[in-house]
Image 1 (tube, rainbow, N blue to C red):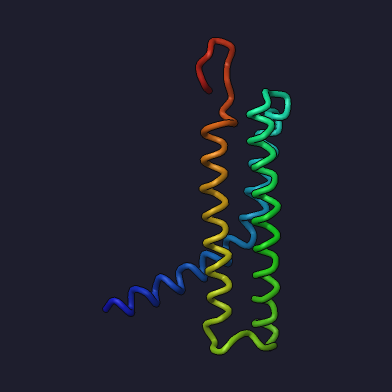
Image 2: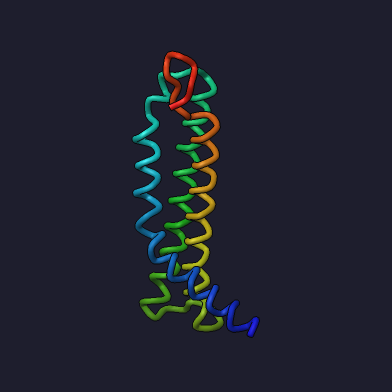
Length: 122
């Protein structure tokens, strides 16, 4: 029973990886575009925005490398010791996407939250 749950989780992560291939660049662009006003803020907001830019570049770069490996698997080239190697690479893209979203959420909620003139946050 436990092995069936692990196998289902394995394939679910791989399936989510198909979604994450497209969602990662789109969400990175949305985060960066939405919070570009932080560059006019203080030093902490500029630094937080820079961290978000670096995290976006790193996540898209690593996902691109994994995507090339998935493409090699689909083209029939050597993929790994067994057929699950492609699913492992797709699962790593989904874990990378979830990690990026968690990091972006933390940065946005702590440092990039918009302030209105009366001192409360929007």
